[in-house]
Length: 82
Image (cartoon, rainbow, N blue to C red; front, side):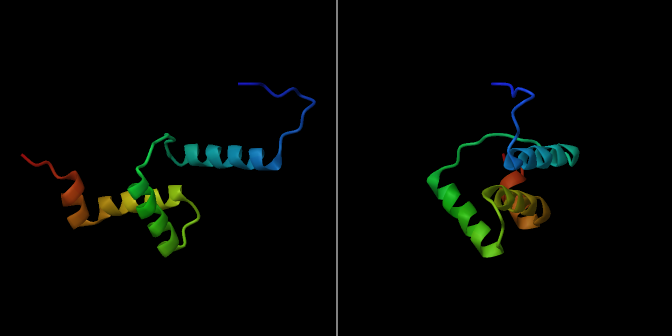
């Protein structure tokens, strides 16, 4: 990765993204890269649109947090079956 020389300025959007990442790190968020199927993207986009969320990331967080809070969804996805 290229390093910035002291004489080069950093774009405002870059500084904004760095601040956001620092804030999320402080809040305990973990960053990861995942590949989603086209069907999964459709579902995430639907949730994003329906709930007026700002990003796919926000939609995925909403879905996954709901699984932890909803007894039926928790049983469906997190229960151990034999």
